[in-house]
Length: 284
Ligand SMILES: NC(=O)c1ccc[n+]([C@@H]2O[C@H](COP(=O)([O-])OP(=O)(O)OC[C@H]3O[C@@H](n4cnc5c(N)ncnc54)[C@H](OP(=O)(O)O)[C@@H]3O)[C@@H](O)[C@H]2O)c1
Figure (cartoon, rainbow, N blue to C red):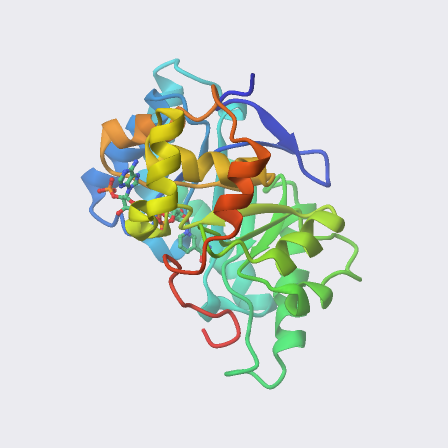
């Protein structure tokens, strides 16, 4: 049986825990610190933050305190951060990484991501902008200060521009929730050895009241959140549920002792879009 510490190998050999903990919109310092602490205490070993979330300092502090109290070793905890879109391009990305490392207070990151691609809506030269951001990412990777690099919100056409690089993205973190599986991108990634992570795996809470999901929750004796996270993991996607509530943090981690049948997976696959954010990487 898999657990919160079960890891999946990325295309460069680094291994990533199969369920992570999200920290977006937890700006309050104490809340950020306490929620990461609760997640680590509940057994999560994979924490997702970003420069844009303005909580890297608290996330790093909670991780360091947990380690220093003898509860885990640094290598047991997988930590991700991301470079924000205003910092696109070679020089700015290198500088943004240094700032992230100062704030987070860790010797290395496990994963560093380009948060959003440069898009043709705002940048005529978007492909080259993404290539030069990626050049900085590969240099950071080659320095050994991050164990793996990847992207976020990259669709197939964005990914294709990076596929000739010496280092292929290890991860693409995209929005996935019921009704919004983004099969084209997921299939491209999975065929090319890029692991997919799901952001807003619960549709920021909007996904939780669908009648099909409620029916399945009753059938399996689980909560709707657990059904959704299980659906994502059975698609070989790594979900990153966020919560500031210790009982929900724990609830979202209890997804390893049941399995959805093929038939029920298909029922969820067939749900029409309803809980997704509407943010498009080509417009953002
Ligand atoms: N790469 C990107 O562009 C991007 C974009 C968005 C998010 N992300 C990452 O993905 C993570 C997750 O996405 P998200 O935070 O947008 O949304 P989410 O995890 O889908 O949903 C979080 C919301 O659901 C509630 N919730 C969590 N567990 C619940 C449960 N068991 N029952 C009922 N409600 C529950 C939370 O409320 P409480 O906190 O009050 O429990 C919160 O309002 C982020 O935190 C971030 O790390 C990345």
